[in-house]
Picture 1 (spheres, rainbow, N blue to C red):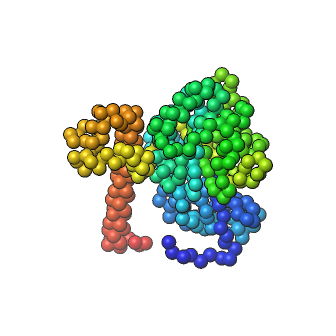
Picture 2: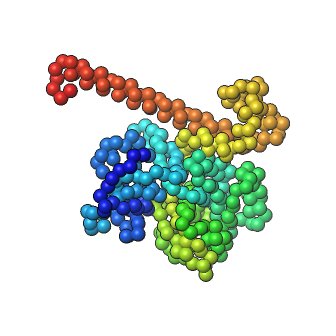
Picture 3: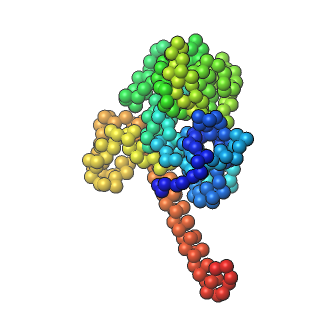
Length: 357
């Protein structure tokens, strides 16, 4: 990246929230309401070229009145992104959405009961690892089940996802809250991910010891709360040794009904490392591990040494990532062909003496 020279007034800041084209940024001088320049919008090829919560940016606050201009997005250390349907457009096309950037740990939160799903854990882990982020699990609302049922869930998770950090929590009786506080380290950033109603905002409120995020009452019959988080927002935890807290930064996210896999093939291979190792021994280099003879993955599946559910989820995620990759290639090809068309049209207009070309 080329070195750019900005006025002395330009400073480094971090994006802590986004609100309809405006961004709240924070640095040692306070908070500013910031916008990107018209040139940045013109140059942007996709949503990934815009600021996201967690980004470090260069701002010019010289406009005053708590306002600033974002001059540049600094290189991202890590990024979590997904594909989702853009329901505001006809046809609901898949688009890549950045969830958060410069994250150290992604807490994947699931509540016991109807929300609990092993495949969903793997889906979140794939997008986290692909972006260079360490995933960890929070099993929430454990007061709703017995100790025996909880132990069974933990065993299932460890069989599918060995060596993963698991924190068991409930805001009823503050179970596991101190453990969660001790897990969070000063100057590191943690992102809470999960479906609507799993209790992400309530857990963050417990970390603060006060209700800084509005939540609805939890149903005693279902253990579900009404989802109220609508924007991603960053919060700065106070260091409170007496309460077991070390400080740290947390990001609350709206609940996600769909966690589409983007170009996360690397993350999938990393997550399913057992299958990736087996795949290297297959007879064919381009083996899909579905029907080919000489497939080592299918041989292990048939022998019972490879879990059927884990294999099925791997194939599903891999196909989804390949489908996205193909669509992206097709989009780039269309853009390239359109660019050639525009260039040819301009040349013909110029050859015919049309002014301006």
